[in-house]
Image (cartoon, rainbow, N blue to C red; front, side, top):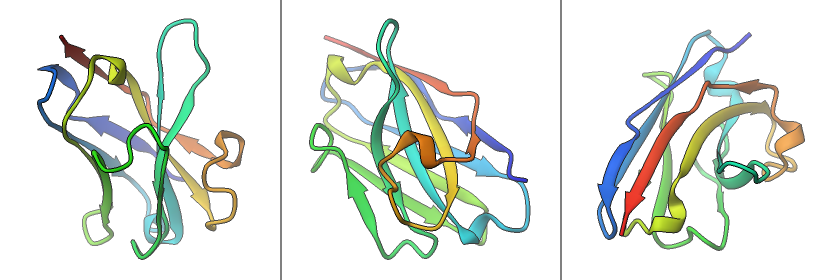
Length: 124
């Protein structure tokens, strides 16, 4: 079992930055790939980025490539999402999630554990 708690969301102006954190419980955190997803009202939850267990592999949605960076610190059982050059269209609830293995890391249905989400609002 892995429990995930996101933090770091808030209100920021367009062009600004935020760093989200995802704190995990459980001794097996380092064996899971971690992903970030986001959702706006009336839309399906969408993939943002993912990182493998060691941090050696990452993948990004085209919409955030070059602006967002995912990382993890296995000693702290924490994953991070650094968001720069934020745009109003990045406004959403952001969720972190954990899955075993790296295969199909962009697929929401492959993730076993989810956090409760944190709101990110980007004003224009």
